[in-house]
Image (cartoon, rainbow over all chains, first blue to last red; front, side, top):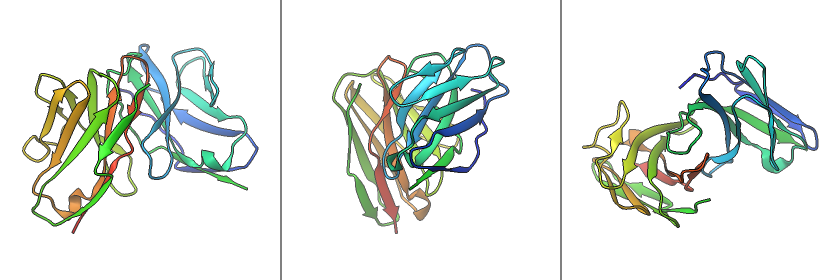
Length: 112
Length: 113
């Protein structure tokens, strides 16, 4: 699976949009971009995933560049409960049968 | 979705002893995974546990140290054997349901003295 690069940490003001970047310049054509987050003392939680097109769900939006070498996770109105470590993962196959390889992630701190 | 429970939620153990962690899922799943998260670190996959076959271990993890059982499609155990303080970590069970996401248990926080 392709390696990802994320900033170690970011801050965001409560109520503002949080934009979390991820670089995956070696991604191959059959690899999907997944985002998970881990709130303190809990197991990781799925947020969103995509292949080429931008995706949106009730939690977040995922913007993937046209060359697919980078992506951005957007939390449109961050709350204090969004404080967590966010992991960007690229994975072959769009099914949960494949393991997830976690990188360092971005520690997002939402501040009042 | 899948709801996963783990037992124990935390434990403090003496070095040289072993601890068995249980993972129970509320539905039948094909793939189960065991991860380790050392203090302040990201998650590292230990092994993949498939029902009816031997677990597949990742590089750096061996069966003698981390034996795994998978007796049916809703249950698995991970044993941490002959523990040392370096084994102090959070151990997480994860499952794949055939959909596109994996679900994680709450983790077992292990401290080895």
